[in-house]
Length: 70
Image (cartoon, rainbow, N blue to C red; front, side):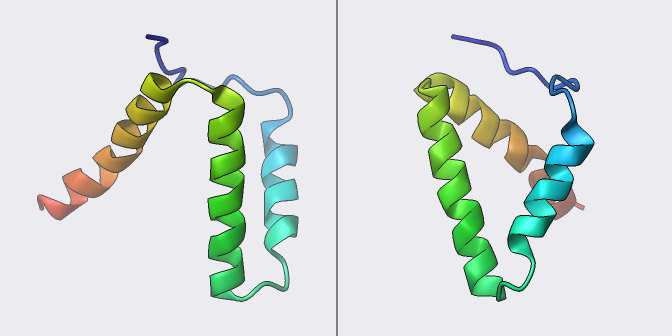
């Protein structure tokens, strides 16, 4: 199993984040949610590693679970 990289690892990450925001401009909440879902599925397919994806899902849930415990 591949370990998750949780430190910055993407050149031009600020520019890519800006591109993501632009992609959402003018969309309704439902359209924005659908865009995010499609993007996630495309990137999951690109990764092609089910264990890595499951690890990422679990890691992404941690802040919410910690907040819910308060």
